[in-house]
Picture 1 (tube, helix red, strand yellow):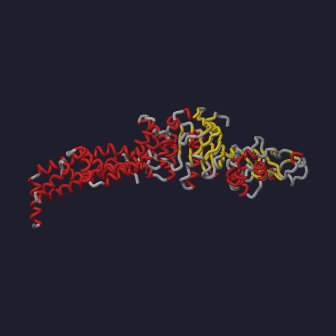
Picture 2 (picture 1 turned 180 degrees about the horizontal axis):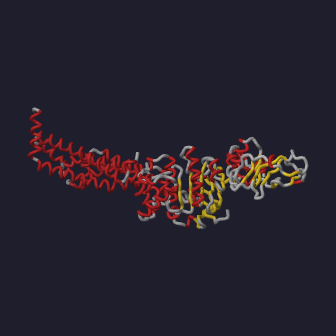
Picture 3 (picture 1 turned 90 degrees about the horizontal axis):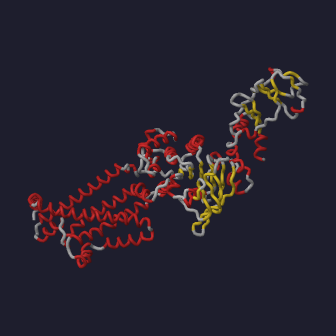
Length: 364
Length: 221
């Protein structure tokens, strides 16, 4: 990420009396990035989030939002410029869905017509029918309420969104659906998001970068892969072993792609003893345009010979370069083989991924 | 005294002396109306204020609670030396009685607004005034209104005592009926008072529903 820094904390601490709830926390969140704060309950992640929009004033250190020190900004204006999705949804029970979505606009005294238009636009964005605008929050399911919560945070088109365990109150199936929808939405809206969760799977799935907190301190920051490779005992026990798969889910197969392997043109003259083939049992066969045709056993060749089309076996199931490593590994396990070809959508052969290439990625 | 004879006397009184009791009822309503206005104008803001200032909350509620327990005749005993007799001390007495339910319900109503809802509103950039008028008051309305309703209905019967302090009202009919051994007048006065109190309570209940419907609050639990 090279975008400008939208949110920055410098050595921020929060005391309640003698208790240090947040201890010298520093991080930067760049434009368009989802930064996840995660940790066990009471680690100070929610407090850290709430200091950004000053719902909780910080005791020491500096917080910058779009380059400006928050203590020098008008708190009300600051909050109106930041979307906020809270843990228990917090829809206003006495207002219709429309008035809930347009609440910030109402606070800003926007004309009614504009409020209505914006509410209509946003309810579609979050995938709810227009007719819901007239309803009241308690007439909606938890998942639907949560969607309204997201729509509400987007009402004033803020650059920055703060999300405090936004999907904590819904069942796992709905949660996954909401996560996917948010990720899809994020591709178009490109907001800067600070996201608090206690669920490591969610963190790996949502976060471009993840910050792990413990006892008020920010223990480590990094991508899902960085976190998985972390040697720190606390981090390791916190993320658990299953987290490796969640981390692999965030990584495209291209990261573990083996390109340096025997590829031969069809009908070419091939010498199985040539040095490039050393250590390989098979060669991959492509046509003149690089389209994949299959693979051929090198061991069965006796000396240099032309590729026999009848001996070319079709490739087993393959994956796309954009697929995740987790998906590729699942495919390998299902097909009980240790490698999987990577073929582009146009059919070009790109290389393979193998258990070994995945493992060395983790080790590296 | 035969009971059917009594009911005839009551009926006769109600029919023939309608001028008299209607004017008594008019004064009664006026007294309660003014007292209620004062109670609401003072009580709701005080309730909100003490809900925000926890140090004042308990002292204020206990002082109001103590005042509430003073018997009305005893309260008159305090008020007459200070301000003589008439409408003014009657108003003060009713105000003192009405304040407790209004202050307590306003305070509790505001306190019971869900913290997550308030946090959401603040997080979206509501200022204190907006938080109060757009979130806290609408959500606390049912509780606050219940306090107001209690105060008004209670004051409607307490106002009967105003006659002892020289203010007109339904108490006049009952007191005169008692003193002149006019049981028809006495019972008629009592029935009229009871009926109007029930009607008033119903009217307030209907009003509460109307307001809630207008602001979509019938959807609250």
